[in-house]
Length: 543
Image 1 (cartoon, rainbow, N blue to C red):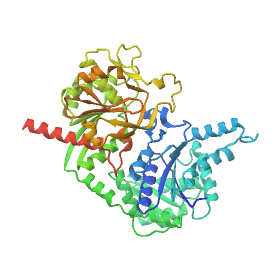
Image 2: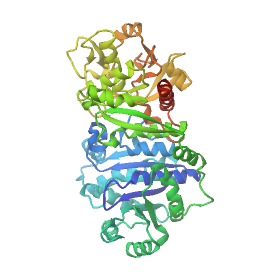
Image 3: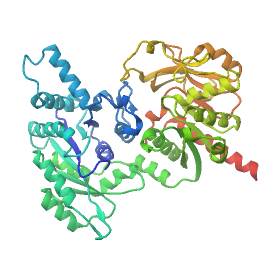
Image 4: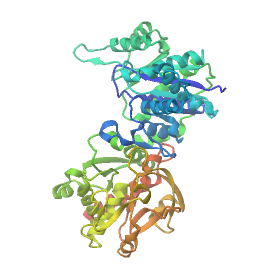
């Protein structure tokens, strides 16, 4: 038995209120007070994990060191806390039911009728407490996906109700995040949706201990009193969460509102002094006061939804602050790239990033963007598929292999410079079967990538089925595309660079998954520096 305390974060009124950011902000404040804290996300959809979901459905799929394909909120958890998450930090309804059905098939329920209560709820409760029972954490924060009242969320809400009862007094806190809408015609904030949401939660047997109220306008003390009275919480436990310019300011707003102190009081934990947010606020200071600006093109096929490339966008924020530079990211849909787009949009950029992705749609636009960056000496970073497109472009336009391609796009290509990985050839199931998680990479001394990292051995996260075909390595290197990073166990090429280009790097891995506020990723930091240098040189040549 451990002394771990539990915090549950539920949502009401509407989705997309930012439960993950509130959870991460509270965790940051508790961590800054010295409490060992972790966050986990329980998602009510029936997919076993988000790995097979289209980014338009659920945003990007985040990948952990241990190879879990998870909800994008885990990216926020890591970026805020600077602590790696794992498979245990993200659980879906699909995984819960899969586990229960497997136990039933093994005969572990001794002939009992398997039901939502107690078998599904017991499995959820067991998963909620998994991290807490390791003894590593003082506080475990659990974000319950979806909105209170959703049919698919009911087993989770019931599990939380049972667990609050099981844990006893002062061992758990329920935070309910709601919306306080502003009616411009009436000129006032309305509390009724929140009252109804709290009532729905209470009908499920759960009393909200803290209300966090998302709002576009300041909430007056009168409104807080009204919410406290009709939602049965203390007035000090009604927390305003007003819109802000950046999610990274939310911990400071929650500190001002006292979310951490109220939580500690309810958990009967010592509240000594203020959390140390010195480094965090140094980052915010640099972010808010850039000395210059660069424009970087993000070439992808899911750019209509910002969450599709969430980790990349956040990595640019971290790297921009580290350089005291405002990074203006210009989203460019690869499917819409034409000669005019290249000239009118890409030509004005200070750097180009070709993003990850799957499938044939929009591939030619990515190849055209790579070619433009290569020929015009614009700083270029290709990530995963972006790196593969760089190899294909070079093979076609420099090696003269006109039909060079990836077997992902053309199984019949006579020059598969990107080929399916050997261990992937016999795989038929799509979910959780790619090359996933953290893998080692050996960097070539005196290369650009070695200079970026400042060391010869790195570990980065992967998510792919296709790889650089080593059969073409000699030809590519003779013509100037050098392989400068290798997996030491498989000899898989992880990094390519161009010999005659100021800054051109393609990486098979996903550096964006490891960038945090405390540790901006060196590849993004150096890429932004290259964009600054390119802009300066461009302006000097025009003077």
